Image (cartoon, rainbow, N blue to C red):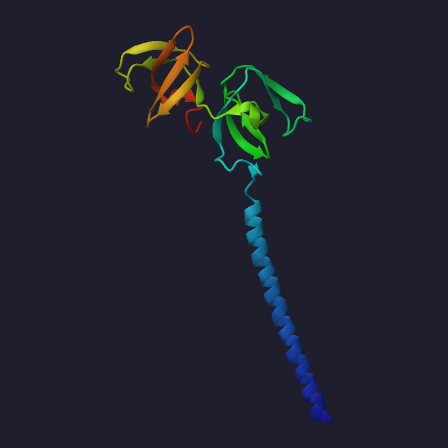
Length: 185
């Protein structure tokens, strides 16, 4: 009978060791998987069911009157009115068909995608000159003042070809650094 008790005690010890090892393995697995899960959640989500386009990016207004809302939906109150067709905005987040945007003046709000266009526009940020060719030594065609709305035709390394439509149409080059909405600004 004593040998049966010894055998039974050895089985109990063996089973306890297995339970201990399995529980340690599960705890380690849980810790590793939760750290991986936490590392993904530390990055803020900027797009929920959005377009899949890169964020941030520059868009422009389709209409001459657009409301910036405090949240992504018509039920949210209007924070601000934008009254300039073609005004450039930086998209910083997406929620379904709504885009969170920021203006050059750092005003943020939500706009429905139907009110936005992918037309490339920009704002002149400081007094500069419209040049005939992309060079500082080029002849100046016009003096451009801050907050002037422009159409961006194309950009190269340091210069952008732009169009200004006022009483007449002006086409020329300005330094990229003087345009808000040209690239990553």
